[in-house]
Length: 402
Image (tube, rainbow, N blue to C red):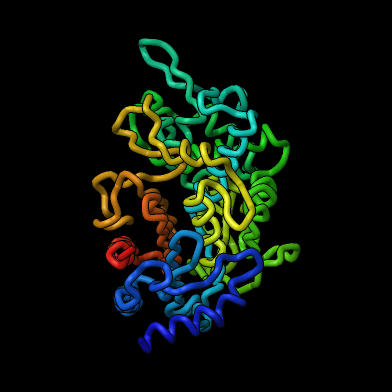
């Protein structure tokens, strides 16, 4: 009884601080969850910090249209000085940017009649090389890019690329991807996770809209949902994002990446506007996005996608080989439990991870989302969040009682 009163009092206090346009803060019991189970989350995250997997983290749980749990742990920075993690700390989302930014933009263009999944990439990127073998040419499509089945390589080595192309920029990188890199499989037959595929999607969006991906997404996705702490350039003076960012890696010259995208290709070549990485956000903001997607594209009277578009986005395309196994922009977990744990049913659970230590999973059947934001690459790129993610997912899934 005492614990319930404490949770209720905290929810009343925090609901006024849930942010402009933010979700209502509640408590596990009011959201049909066993509140005592959430003490186990504390112990799992504390162990990750003690073992130096990450200096700090935030865990947020959304149930329906409410935040059932939100807590900050540890430190957002240890070098050059120690600063505590807060519930509103802004994180470099790394590859979570692919689904919260680029994918949503692509799906919006599809439902607005400006793009189709079956469109050939070379329709938008002139000279884009398709797959060719003895049987002829197979075009690479928008669907192939979204499902990481285009055959494009995963990545480039930015420093090597820049040494060979000193004047490289986003356009020259796109030309390199389009015409010089090998295609390693017939489209739709094999999953090869590719940041370069999402950089290609960036350029498709920009060709159609006539504006930078970051500007389109800011206006049509983040601002449209009232996500006031989410953007591509948190240290840009024109943004209203607080300068309370979680630090990432300390570079060889001693420079601490703080509010600058960690991904080298996104930072060094694409200058922060990139289809594979670049979004910065806070846990309360990502809770809004998760609730909107679990609610068919709308929350708090704001809509970013139609209900049928959301359904399509979370389907595995039937014309892809089963070996691909990905939905449009999102991972599906099948028999894997690395991020989604063991308890959430795999057929209705979708998510994505980010290299810096971030992750989101959503179970559509129970309308439960688990968001973990960690800066595991600070001060060095060493720890792995895999075990922590799975353990927290199991605790949250096991806490669902209604």
